[in-house]
Length: 302
Ligand SMILES: [Zn+2]
Image (tube, rainbow, N blue to C red; front, side, top):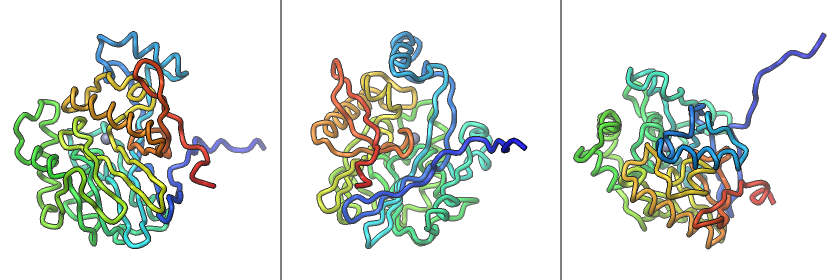
């Protein structure tokens, strides 16, 4: 009897030490998207993006897009960065088939955590794939947590001025999910501390108030850039290329360049919500003002 085929199996949970902290990136879900073009660079830069894909041995016509919340246990508090897609696609007709169902809570259980263990939920920005897991059927999923929201992002989505057409439904969703949680939320700005060792960093652009987070324990440092750079080849080698889901494209480019430059100069570990799992890596300086992603191998395991 030949052995049965079991289908694909890929890691979705792992845990690392960062000084005295434990860091657990968890794949909430992932999706295969068609073509890097026109999402990255529009039709105008299709040839450049295709050449970039080819040079990096990836398919220009399909790409994998993971959604990776991160749990940080500081030893005193359990902090969750972003919440995945939750049941958004089941609850909203507009999102059917566009966002895979979130599996964060089930995978947290495999990693040893219950939703009520979470002390702080930090939302880097208000896009659906980051806020979708906050509530289920109108109920709060992380029932005992306090929330940390970016003040600028909260203001932007609440006011609803200058929301581009493609984000109109996102705005509705934001108001519906986030408004009832605001009473338990701390609104922060760049430079503010979430808990000792975790500080917000200005990454405005992809969303008007996107925050990155500097995480430090016993001299070990990690920059969780969330959605500052959303593809490990295109956004890093060519940070100048516009991405359709960046809300303020020029500001997104400026933030991307500044943060990549900082991570490269300081030689620190970076984490990105849409980077290939576990989403950790380093940034090297590349050609013509670009950079290169050097995925984490065993640096944190030593
Ligand atoms: Zn995202």
